[in-house]
Structure formats: C-alpha cells, structure tokens
Image (cartoon, rainbow over the protein chains, first blue to last red):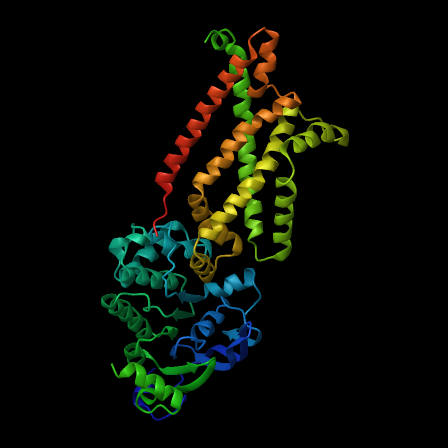
Length: 262
Length: 215
C-alpha cells in the first residue's frame, strides 16, 4: 500500500495508489480582475494524501474550497468519484456529505454541544437514529481524544480541541475524502501537534486527504505528494522528499529558502 | 380606581381580546416572518425577489391602510365571511411579519459565514442549514430588537379598535357610554399596556440569559 516507501524520492508523480477519486480539469477562477486559479489540472487518487503548499494568495485555499464547491469556478470540470460537481441544490448536498471539510477557523456550530456538532450530519443527512449517531459520535470523539468534552459548548474548548472535534465531525459522515484548509494556521503553537497527530493517524489509516498547510513536518511525514502553487498555478508536483531536497522551480526554491531557514 | 373597579368587566373583556389578537398575530408574524426572512437570503434569486417585494410593499404601507383593505376590501371578495377580529389578526400578522423578517435577516447576517459553510460542508441542504444552524443562532442574536417588534405589535393591536374589534383600544368608547371620564379610562388603559410590555421585557431578559451563544 506504500509504494512511496519502496521507491523513494526520485520518481515524479508516479507515486499513485488506487483509482482517481478527484479529477480537476482545466479550471479557472477570477475574482474580478484577479486570476486566482489558472488552468489547474490535478488528480488525487483513492487513499492518497496530497499536501498543497504555496505562498499566501497562491490560490491553494481557493482550489481546496472549489473541490466541494464552496467556491464556484468560472470554467473547467471537477469530478469526484466520477461524478461532476452539480449545481447548488440537493444533489450537491449529497455530494458534499461524502466530502469532509476541516476549516482554518474550525467553524463548529456555536449553539450546539460538541457531541451535537458531531451527530447533526449523521442524523439529518445520513438518517441515523439519535442513539446510533451518539454512539458513533462518542467513539469518534474518543478517537481524536476529546470524548471527555462531549457535552461542553465549542467555545469552552481550546483551539486544538475544537479543531479535533471538527475533524471528528467530518469523519462522522464517513467521507470518501477529507479536505483540510489550513487546519493548524489558527492554532497556538503548543496546540498544533495534537491536531497534526490526528491528521497523521488519518493518513496512516488510508483516508484520502487534500491538505492545504504550512506544516512542512506534516508534508514530509504523511504526504504521498506535494503540490506547490504560486500565483494561481501549479508550479511543481512531486514527492515530498523530492520537493524539499531538490525543488526544480526558482519559485519553489525561493519559497522553501524563506520558510526552512528558520 | 373606581373607574377601573366599577367597569372591570369591560377592562377584562377588552384586554382579553387584545391578548388574543396579539398572540395569534404574533404567532402568524413569527412564522411568516421567518419564512420571508429566509427567502431574503436564499441562493435562489426569484425567492429573494418575492421576499424583498413583500417586505417593501407591506412594510411601506401604513398599518391603518392595511386594516382598511382587510376590513372593507375583504368582505367584497365573495369569500367566506370572517369576523373582523380574524381579519385584524391577519392584517397585523402580515404587517408585523415584514419587521420580523428584517430583524431576522439582520440576525442571519451576524452569524459568521463559516457556520453556513460548515453546515453545507456536512451535506445539509439550504433548508436544513437554515433551520438547524443559521436561524437558531440568528434568533438568539436578535432577541432584544425582536422583542421590540412584538411590543410594537402589542400596541398596534389598538388600531383594530377603529374597525369594530372591541379590544383594549375600544374600552374608552365603551365606557364613554357609561359616562366615565375619557382621560381617566385612557390612563388606565395605558397603565395596563405598560404592565403588559413589562412582562414582555421580562420574557426578553430571561430568553437572552438562557439562549446566549458564546463565541
């Protein structure tokens, strides 16, 4: 299951397991004059962990959000598991249920307890009974290490705990893949690791993940592939080893020199 | 005091009807206003247009005129006969719903965008995100102005007195026939209204404390 272990670093993009799950084809997006996504093409396979790196304003978050259509695109096609992203409506809601999303700002439902946050989707979208959903929810909270907070409100938790609840909320839907949009960027330094540990566990369990992050440690440890974006384009796409030790483009070299020197 | 005690029957009947009109109109306004408020933030453009059109049309019409339409227009429509009281409830409800909708829309705008995104991301439909995530938080955010809307409604019920609905605003007319001094009667009516509003304010405070959303 881990071809990346046996064939380290040198091969480009060939490190792929499983069938394509997310296919992004020729997508473009503008914010007025600003061309934020320029002809993006990318494939994420089942079970693959792809880390998207790049300077701020490079379009990496926009790309991540476009995959479950929280951002619309001007042209191009995105398919998930062979299905083209539908227009806003019931079908899109169905599709989003299969795509977990973890936000930079956690976005836990502020008026609901931690447990209710995790059970809402399974009950309302998947049709589980309250008892089943709570059993499953508690197991997930246990897994991310916050089961003892189940009956508190989100605001009573630390940032790291909130983000772990957010991951549990995404997992509760049993998604085909999880999108993580800078999941540790809003956290205090001492809380980053507890969230990264949960993410590494997920990666090891074979969850398909697209992670926008600045955590190079996570990329090295858990990513099958790194996509480097700058100015709305994919500049480099390679294995983590290759990217960190032997970046090809000047923009990637420049970016890495800025963040790795410290 | 004599004015009140000697005519307690008229006061009790009047305010009983006032409360009845108020409660039904409030319920109607709350339901309709919530629907219209949600329509105004709908992703579907025609829904927004209908919501906006309704609010602009009805909110910009004086309540007295709306009452006129119902009291004199409706009976001409050859529809089932309905009491003036029911018509007054509809008129007040339709009118107040516009304020409920606008107050609620303000509330929806206070809910961080991320809440709606998270709701959509777990696969809730627009209606589900509204009813489970956005509206509950919006209502909590606008309890004080929402109560003001209902306090205004309570007082607006007196307009119905002009259309033969014998609620509290009608007490003076009733009692002039018994030879009671108008100014004293009106002062009593006003005082009771102040007490009723005080009750609503109390309800507001209880709700505010119990439903606070911590961020």
